[in-house]
Image (cartoon, rainbow, N blue to C red; front, side):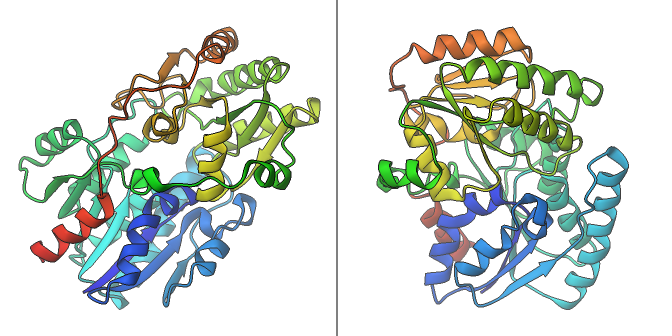
Length: 367
């Protein structure tokens, strides 16, 4: 069975990894990676190098990302991606192609495949993020897919309502948590030394723009900057840099200013990679930001999360999430509250056993 896997960013590739490893080891499958988006961007860490180091026999690369991130550039990148993938789907054929999440590049690649009848399998469909236009892209991808592997029953129900049928919808849990019970973090001394983190508690921070609030992102980015400056006085701050979203450069510039003004209290990471990121989550005191990893994964590491603003509004949440408005004082107050908590000991609504194995079993029984 010939399988293609669309990966457009460090985030989706890290989620895919448990499934990719299982597919690569199974002689039933012939695996090809299709890398595009920020994987090929030097300004976003050129994460294609990490994919190449993982030893796949076939990796296709498609460059279509325009460097600017204003609305016109994002729309133009979408159009270029569709054109590039029109040529790709004309010349490459698969029994199934995996797609994941909700990014605009992923949507463009999938939309280009519709006239060619490309059979898509979508991971993380049915979710809701009311503060991001990704919500629209996610549903577009779901409508073009034949298989749907969702993280919770709630999302399966939403997909059934969207598609008008439950055919091809399977609730399997979050793939990124597939190996969480056996995950062993990098040794603490090695991890701290590698990234020059001082021997003290730190906050793990990731912020992306609220793409449904374009006129407010300048204000939000400054609120983030000021709040993190104050927080860094009591907690060292480790920031993973924003992806290529609309107006992401506004946040990137604010973060670089924050680093310049607080040199010894801020660490910036362009691309951790999954093992390092999970290790950072393991060792951190808490998480701050508006990224999906805080919602999906942090509960399994016993961490509380300050979920800022509306970007993730509508997603199912575990009891470790502390929601707060996108203001300087609210971010500081929520962080101070969480900093006084012990380890979170509740459950994770996104966790199910053997996600990758169950996906493979479903494919073998269905195709």
